[in-house]
Length: 207
Image (tube, rainbow, N blue to C red):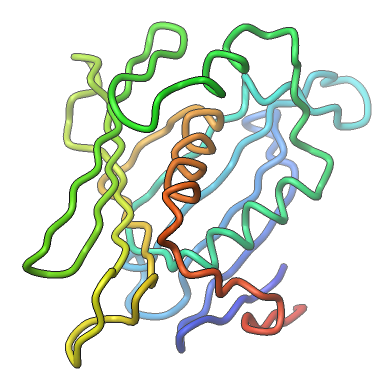
């Protein structure tokens, strides 16, 4: 288990095998504030060989579980780095969905299998915020679950510095890793997120 610190708040990061799910899970949970109010995000990687050593199935089968709350962008970047350097995310370049997602536009409708997602962005000049949102448009899941990233593009006494970004998760939602990862790339390539996620800026405590 690790505890990451950023902006005066603590985040618990664990990984391990979940027998009920037959999957390896990476879980991040906020430790600051009342129980259940902090951010929660987990990534579930199904096991391809249940009767032997853990063998990850390809990223087409990986699922992200979003449990609400706000997550600073540097913490999200560190979590993604942890996942992608673990060797547990295995891509199948022969899968059509991988190529299709890589070529998706930065806004509009994304389709993967039978699920459809919409990505939108907007600029709010009155608050100095650039906003990116991802939600699902399938009728059976139209229950208000979505994620957004707010990026400050103006500095005042009452606003965060330029480039300060926060991921906010609404409701409880499970989406494909490929969709979540593509959304992160969209925000990254916008070019207005301040690059502050250096290892030295984030304290890691081994417990």
